[in-house]
Image (cartoon, rainbow, N blue to C red; front, side):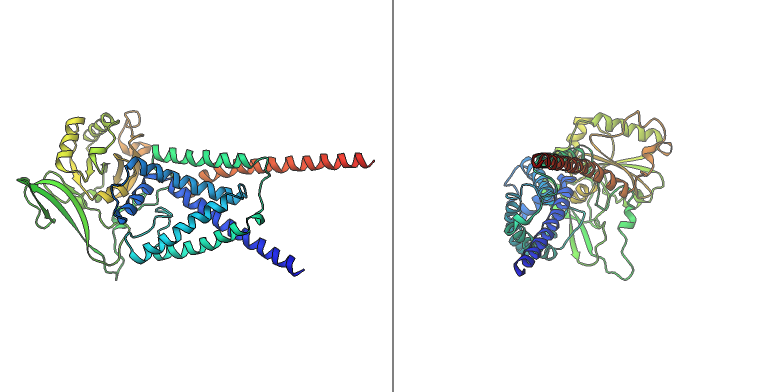
Length: 435
């Protein structure tokens, strides 16, 4: 009796650990997969922390970012449905055995601000990440040790279909998010966000003091300047960086400053308080920007001139890259210098397009789906793309959830019906034999 009770407790505990691990891995893999570029940037941060910033080509890092999200998501689905019970707990245990000491090192040495395990959806400190991984490691050990107690939610007849659909679904999510923009935008520049509000400091809080430094060149000599001592136009812009002068409260948006490339004027306040529309072409590095839609961008600039909308190209590129871009594309729009990390945070496309009105993000487009003349056939005030989207976050969650859950529920129902039918047949056969 005592052994049976111990076995039941162990079985319950194992399946609690199994579902806990499954939910965490599915969530972690999903948020990485909807933002593969964000995962790439985080892996690059890790490589810098390890002293290997140029160890791998960016294409290989991107592939690693994609595979990381896919593997985590699929492992979570396998564990949730109780399929591939021999190999899945083993792989998860190996992953947690590697990640737990790694996050301990991150917590102690603090080379990066957060691990990025949940993307921008849930930001944890390095110590919070370590203790989270300790819990996951305990659950992984339990799920591996008593893996025979993990009960399946589908029969072996249909488990291959669950496994296949998990891969197809997550690769579909990655493809959609890479071609367009992430389905869910957890960054402070999402559609509907008001940038000035994101920069506000609550009353009584001491703000973190930042300083933007500009690296300029003249006669072969490079020097750093701030806004206070920005030189004349005889100096050539090379790069910019934002440094912390004094740590304090950090608002969601803390390094948004727009400096014109031509004369070094700060136009941040002017743009964010403009009651009209402003298009921001965000290209963090012009030398690697996608040129497939440059004609469409130039047409968009002409549209802005026609309707008196403002249009700026935001970049952290040096003057020579800007000049080369102008020569290659025939671009005539003005350029604004911003911090490279800020630009990559604003939109996951190079270039990408943001529409502002009174400091609020009205719309965002990747380079692959920029608005064309068929969409821009009137003033923005009269067009759907000039209005905030009506769909709520809950609507998007329901849509994404439904596309994954409903097919799987259908498979499970078919599986149950099939099992009941087979059991009835078996009972009928036995009864006939007994007669």
